[in-house]
Amino acid sequence: MHPPGCTAQARASDAMNDRKGDVSMPFVDLHSHTTASDGTQPPADNVKLAAAAGLAAVAITDHDTVAGLAEAIEAGKEYGIEVVPGVEISTVHAGQDIHVLGYFIDWKDETFLSRLAELRRVRDRRNDMIIERLQALGLEVTMDDVMASLMASKKAEETVGRPHIADALVRKGYVANMAEAFERYLAKGAAAYINPPRIEPITAIQWILEAGGAPVLAHPGLYDQDDIIPQLKEAGLVGLEAYHSDHTPEQETHYTALAESLGLTITAGSDFHGERGGVVFHAPLGARRIDASVCKRLYEQRGGRP
Image (cartoon, rainbow, N blue to C red; front, side, top):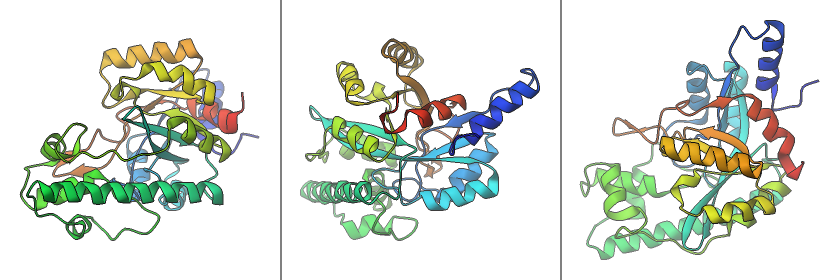
């Protein structure tokens, strides 16, 4: 019997065996966001897009929340797409935002849910601090403006992030588009950037392992902190997102080699966030993909299994 959560890989293996390699291994996109965090598409739409892109599986990895998983998993049954239950946890190390992906987590575990709720409270405080700094800069923007820019009302277990603030700045005419909002105000080093104290990536790895998941470092090329990756592996990190929409080809080659040297699973993700102002944020779903055997390997590594 094939393990739960890896039927996409199992079907791929069966097809390859039955047809002696005449069909290509199906692919998976292991990084996507929905309206449960800062994406613009409902979870079911991500699954539908995954089917349209010819994927065997898609991971839903919203920021500090698992609120979109139930809808996505139901949609997966409708579209015949495997949904990998995931999350992207926000952490900070040496003043740098570091994101840790967790796959095949027990997304109903009460301890894990409580920990995510605390992370969302930190995020809410960060958002308030950003608004205060924007107002100090003379921009008349409030959290009410931010919430008005959302496609739908947010539930308590969903998150509000910088892209939502950027949307409000565009709507009020302070910037022309999201890229300008981040460049002038919201990106690291910009005028209204705030980075409050958060948990360390090692803590996020521990939380994911304790929730029965497989921790993977998201888009390492954005951090310039390769020196911490061996330390994270010692803490239980099992994978590295070598293929990401914001990585250069050189970075993808570098992180593939680094993952191989450390014995880490190589993953890939588009980091799809939907479309804003006619522009797809990061990349279309499926733009970064990897063969479905990675799904099985992550499943086998969940909870710190060797």
